[in-house]
Amino acid sequence: MVWDPTVDGGQRNGPDIVVAADGLGTKSHSVVLGYPTRAVSTGYCVDRAAYPVSVLKDSPVLLKAIAELGRPQWRMYNGDRCHIVVCITKDRVAINSTHADDGTATESWSTGVTPEQMAAALPNLERWDPLLVKAIKNTPPDNIVRWKLCLRNPQPKWTSATGRVVQVGNAAHSLLPTSANGAAMALEDSISLAECLGLGEKEGAAVATRVTDGGHAFLFYGKWLWQHNAENYAAANFEAARQSIELGSVFKNTNLPRGHVFEDWTML
Image 1: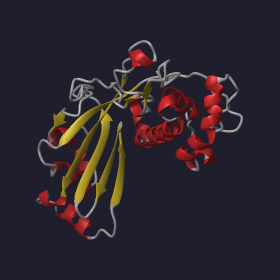
Image 2: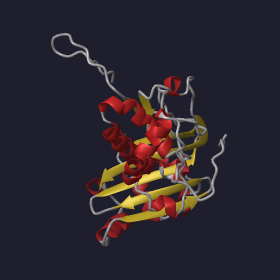
Image 3: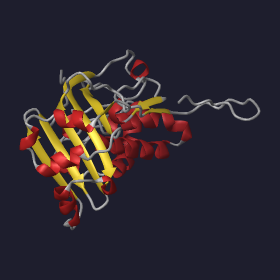
Image 4: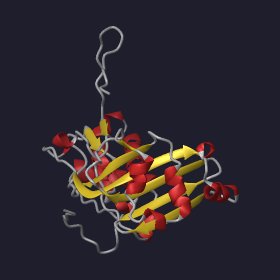
């Protein structure tokens, strides 16, 4: 969707900031980095499906498990070049099946496959948990999306030179898909950006986006991460980070392991 800034009376209002939250296939790289870049396939894809329990038929093993649930249940399965997560609740069944891409996956939420195709992607299907097999075979037609899993190398910045375009989520940092951390980081991006924009206010919006870029560029597992509060960190460090941009003063990011010095690296 393209936003038309024209309002009643013919007046045109331009935005202060453009937030590129358009995912892995973002069109913002030519502005932020100065050149377009494409994501590279990992060789894997994921089949995703969710449906209400009411559609289940001829599945006593699955219906019995649902009837005995005390709380929602996650089941994880590992196989040869594949892994599957099944979530069952009193109301819904959800399936995420990651497996080698046979060439049918695309970077599109409209690429659908049948339950039979989803099942065929798992080797030796008859040897898997009967509950998993029934969960797949009972999936309603036209309810499964096959999504190509891709990645890009880390990039040096997420904000344009003017600070008017800022990337968040997979547009900024496409994590290894199997790390299962993309949604959490996208939320942290958004929280940090919102806090910085609030502190920078309208006249300082372009600086605020550059502050958030430098404020959470390093993320590694550890106490400093899982006790990290993105909103509080942005609020506490906003002024020092802004002065480093405007006045050239030294700002040291503390949201990283003690003694760590960042160096460029690649995944490809």
